[in-house]
Image (cartoon, rainbow, N blue to C red):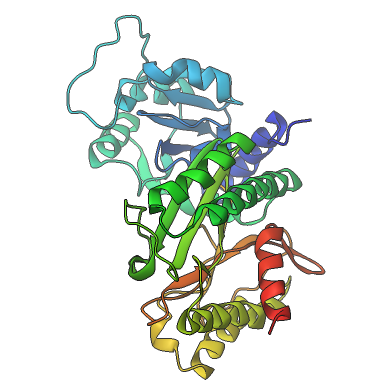
Amino acid sequence: MKIKIQENEFFARIDRIKTAMAAENLDAVLVYGDEYRKENLRYVSNYWPIFERGAVLIGRHAEPILLCAPECEKVAHEMSAIKDIRLVPDFLCVTVPDEITYPHAKYTSFRKLAAEIGGIKRLGIVGIDAMSHNLYESIAGSFEAEVVDANKILFDLRRIKSPAEIACLREAARIADVGYTAHMAACLPGRTELEAVAAGEAAARAEGAEAIAFFVFGSGERTATIVGRPTDKVIEDGDMIMGALAIQYEGYVASVEIPFAAGMMPAETRRVIDVLVRAEAAGLPFLKAGGKMSDFVKAVRNHFRREGLEEYDIYPPLHGCGCAEAESPYPNEDTEDVFLEGMTVNTDISLFGLKGGSNRIEEGFVITADGAKTMSPLVRKYCADWLGNK
């Protein structure tokens, strides 16, 4: 059976949203998404628009309605777990100011939808930070209700992953491992950065990736770009390679990054890699259910401090993962929260600006009662082999 989220799980999520709506005294919630900020919309419906916008309208005492625009109507029917699909002109193509005419489209409107559900005095919007001001004004004016930011409802629900979600993330990580293996083999002196990235992306697509969420890349001095894109720069012998491959599978994103060098590895580069690998090793014992998130962060950063490299550590070394590559939690040294069983997280252990090059380690983990379980055997083996060879 294909690894995916079954329809009943989407409706269970909507039921949990309705429970949260009652607690927040919300009469309806509109979950917004588009091609770029897709995570919440995909989470509640499985729909992922291209070019256009979309939303799910959930009345506390009504069945959910998927809202889309004409060009993606068939895509919506193909993807969505919610079968009541309506067209609204407000969700037309996001990139042009022109009024696009679709002569066969049968539109509804936000005002008609508000009347259909009825009794909406408080409307929560999930994705309020992702939509345009004009769209927000159209929604607020049409529903004639108090509008509140309901992002927290989805952020809270998405923190703990179901077995099906974990299976999707594991499959995304498996595909990322395949792609990254091909990418590492292609990072040879004389090839361009674009050629090296293309090898990894092609292998991942062939293995079943529905999308390449991103491929951050830099070689040599370009590793200091932090989130650079590949260019036609030629990889040179001894270049540090900084490449992060993020794979999307059934709406879930796993990222993989291993610090390595092309050709002969200079001593300065070896030291950077060694510090990164040992910093992750210092933090992993704290990555467990019931453990304070801040303890993981402190363990990693204390290792950098002992090495005298704290000035090159530019952001926290861990974040959640799921429908977005980076999602809650995103802890720092002051975070009081603890890891919970069923959370999925990604290490993001980095040093930028050193003479030997800049890099990071990205490895996905599932938090279990017995500790953290890697989702990326490739990264785990690389780090274990590195430490075993010291």
